[in-house]
Length: 111
Length: 116
Image 1: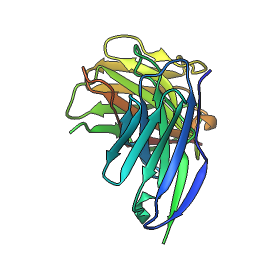
Image 2: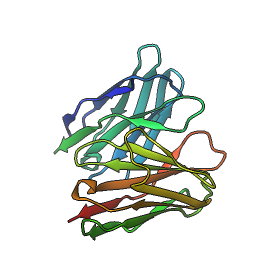
Image 3: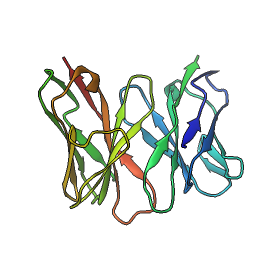
Image 4: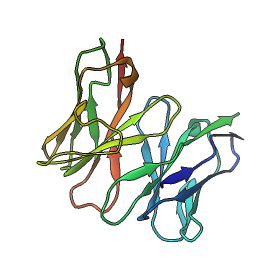
């Protein structure tokens, strides 16, 4: 079966660092995405990992370990506007564009 | 670039009626579009994959006769919810992949459907 797990909710303080974990068990794997979604809006692309290692993009970084079926999204210097849901999604295989989404992690940033 | 629009953004309809939602890629051609449904506080669930010029591929458990998908051109896909019921009330989001691109999907702003 297909299973992607994330913590349901997290809280953090403005200026801090937070790490959102994602573990996956899928029948195929051809890349992992992180999206940000504010309430009532569509997801926006944050990062894409297909090889093991860390990808850094400004305040956001994403890590992937394919052998462990594990990824995390690291948010630095948190701002109030980072309060949103963060969705982990796996692309299931080479012959498919289908994304399988995790349940999402709702992050609340407090002043 | 890579903007996807959806229309309408919100719609309220009566039980038993049909509703059509449009998804357009504004500045690129999309051979493949995806339709998702998202219930409150839940993640996105893929409903179907829409390919230009061919029949849509539906995910298990999604009724193809209830959720009609048409992908008539490289920039437009439509989802029609037929004989809508209150349990169809949800946030419907489409995404599109640029023709020939490797991986990224661009999401539309979503359509909030409420069936009374």
